[in-house]
Image 1 (cartoon, rainbow, N blue to C red):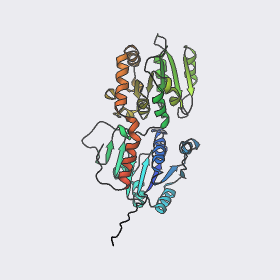
Image 2: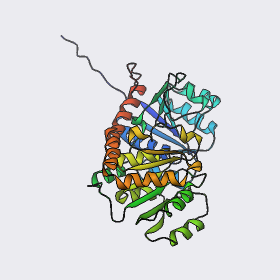
Image 3: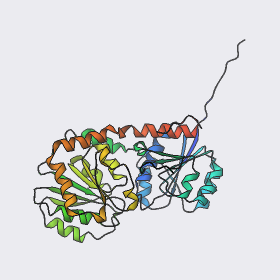
Image 4: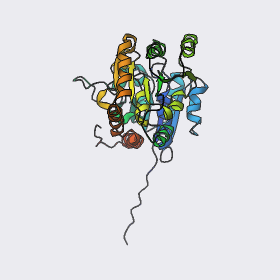
Length: 349
């Protein structure tokens, strides 16, 4: 009598730990929600979210996800000790060594996203969307590439709805400095754009992270036709369907623009963004360097270059689409499953 071999595959426990960071904005929470939703039908998925307000919670509840809230590291340690996850995925915060050392005993594998702290060196994998140019001293656990940006379904829908890259009449420029705009590049950019003596439609995207007074912006908006402010938590997303050119910071926002396919001009809000290698010419962007040193002539020339040369706009969009950012979610899902199942043939992407 032949014995039948019965194999059973138990689900892996995957715990996401995410924390809002003012420098990185809300995107790491969005990435966590996207990936958790992708994995939860196949594996046991848990989300641990550090308390930071209702807006953060809604990023998860909008996708029918229920995060477990915590305030202190001790609370998190207790939860993770009781859970015993196979994989912990951390996003949002640059970690310190002590924090990682306290969590490490409770899991087999530890993966971080965009962790520039010393704790990131202790992870089994540190996946960077905000990657720098390759350096000789890059840590061995860093996996850096454009695939590390998880894409919201709304961005995919906007991309499919854009049927043409022909300019509107007048051309529509969207200005969106997300993630705090610490040096008020919104005001600086609008002031420079108002000096262009050509017909333009300009919309300024403002969300709750914009900490400056909007009175000066409103005064400039009133001084020029076809110029307005849009205050909304999803201001950029609401404007992308009709934007001809986007001017933005050099953090995660260029990925959002590239996933839709729109000519884009970027300016770094700080030195960290200045080091990000993604929003550059070889990916279709016009990069102006550090925003607080941005000259009026530089941004005006960049705008005119895109407005006057259809081939330049087409090249920008073609380079963005060549990145195949819409495929990223499945790539990241597979990569996290490789870590969860301890597959050792992981190839750096």
